[in-house]
Length: 113
Image: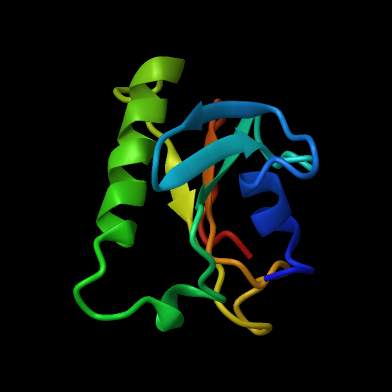
């Protein structure tokens, strides 16, 4: 999508602090971190949100595999981390491109808000 900021990051049209990239996904630092470690994991292919991923597409499981790689890389796989997906306006989604927040480095509270 031409006006999607995450598509522009995935296409390297605008800069981001990219921490990981493969053929399907990209991980970069969140510009407004809510934890000491706060990354965004996005698919390179545009989906508005999780409800728009076609049945049989493996992108969600691939994103979780990438999240585990990031947890190991950051040394938080044993102490804990949080993976969050916001869907739709009431769910708190602010960018209409499927993305997951990877948060770690502090005690996470429940309920989150």
